[in-house]
Length: 161
Image 1: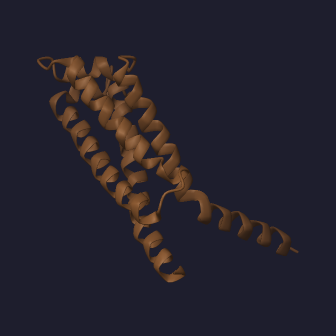
Image 2: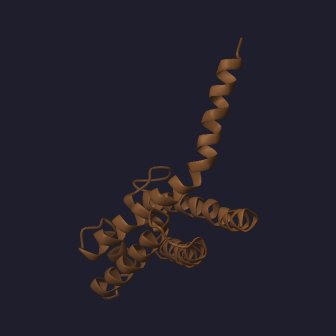
Image 3: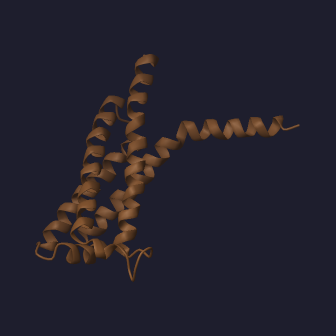
């Protein structure tokens, strides 16, 4: 009686297994490219966070560096959209994921400089900064999934050759 539903479920699972990690990589890439561009054009809500957390830094320079860094991460994650050799794509994505983890570590470091800026008016209500930190946990988890599948892609390429 449930056999038709099981076959539909298997088909959906196979589709998600085949395209899920790539979809995650592309959406993370678009997000990083977008946020990086916003920093470069000084249109990011992160500017206020930066001023509170690190008041003595030259904010324009920091925003440009962070913006270019995030734009590089985003564009690197978008490489699957282009017809490039798999070994080149995987090598670049590995470097980009390292950049992403370093950026996330720096973001968490900001939370150490301004921990009271995470919650307002009190716990558990997040400020924009707290929301930003929480979203970086999601980005970190997404990057771990993508990183965990790069070797699988490499091995699949080796077996297919």
